[in-house]
Image (cartoon, rainbow, N blue to C red; front, side):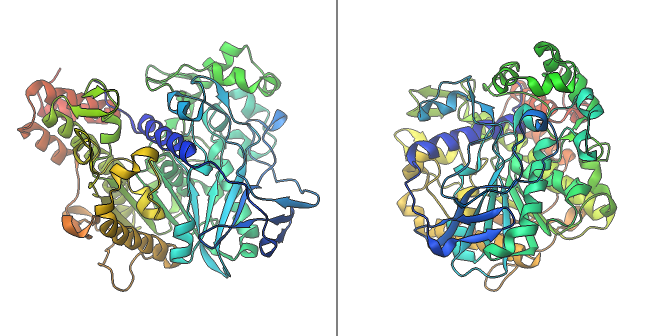
Length: 568
């Protein structure tokens, strides 16, 4: 059994959530509110008032449409509009392929959807907002799927008195594509980078810098935050010289610090499929003009799909001038090679369980109503060790690198809430636990998240404890956005990450499970493998399956695994 890599997991999870949200929350007809009229350099726009008392502007263009000759170019400035723009509806999702999790929306999997003209953002401001900290949310979806309209930050904005911006960016092949013909025809230096999705986010941050004061935000206090692929993109922005000065704190929720070498993204390797050169050859495109002339649908359909039915391609590419270090991870060795702002990074205790719950190799599944693990010990161990590896690669490992280089403003966390209920014979507490993405409803203080299963995942009997944890987490996040320090009155202290065995994370859980408390000790590869070797929940065959999953995710683990375990 191969391990599930983080990009594929984020695709799987995000698609489930987005499909449920779209099915259960159709966008209502809205009326413009005159008091939300604002004039910016592009023109005049009007938003609306949400039921929470938040002023909202949706679908605001922040860059020129990246179509025609602007496809696979760094984003260009947005064009002005005439009259008043009624910013009442989300922009179209960026061009992507549907998958089996789009079925609840009545969409057939395997078809192109969305538009290349998709570079819009949404602004959520409390009433009478004035010089408020700005929280800039980057959605997940493996960088090949997803859209900003799946998230609803109104409660976070009004509860914590912060201004929230959510952004759309090019995904899939339109967001990440490394080809010599495009570099050779570059018109500006950033055109030579293959990370078009990251450049879109930089353009949106430039829009925030230039315009957010008009909406009540403070352009000198911008926090970028994102989950899964969104967290991965936060790491990329931290490493990008072009993003310097555009944000002042950064939060990675279940993020990543991995990257592809530029040559591998362009020309492929034994482990890289759907390289840009391979796709261009399939489409018969040799020049930049050829590539710009291709139909959106033809580009998407040229890709082979991953095991979950999503586009499979290299994303986050270490290439100069956007990410000039040899790898993304190496940027964090020295504060001189990344944007060394205060950083918060964390993972969830049971990251892998949501993907495992849908894996027929691991669970019995009767009509999606009754699901339980085939081997409970193996099911939990497989999640435990891969989730610990995720923590090592996304929290302790990067924090140790930064501390060694002298950057000490790093805060680590682990999210442990696992009080989902039962549905018939399905024990969601065991099946899902503190799974990937489960912290998002707590940060946004909105528990209408999983669609029809919300009433089971978020039961009435846990509402008071959940609300207390959610409000505390929102306050930590917002205080971090305000000052760069998440600590505030009346909450447990959150220390900075300290290198070595003295490392401390903040664990988030409800009071009945120990509450918010310090989690001591560093996670290391040696500890993970020592525990795996002695784990009594599993047999030797299962032990080696788990070891193989760790190697699949982190090939550098292989020599260490072979030294500890007799696995072939």
